[in-house]
Length: 118
Image (tube, rainbow, N blue to C red):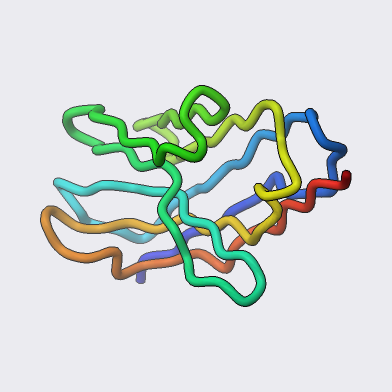
């Protein structure tokens, strides 16, 4: 059974930084993409960054380019999101998800809350 566990959220002031982690276990995927989504209260989830495990290709949404950095550690089956210059609009629950090959994101973690105080 695939499990995704996020950590690293918290309350930070505007302009602060955070590092989120996601560790995946129980999978047998050979080709997959992992991503960070976020969902604010009353809004749907949006993908903010994604990384292909094989190619290393990376995607960032326009709203986070230049402030968020995604990276992976193949040996630890871990994915990270470094966030700088946090803004109040970044306040959301951040979720880790994985999509096998060309499928949709079918496995999700429980999320970690990021709150940016103004």
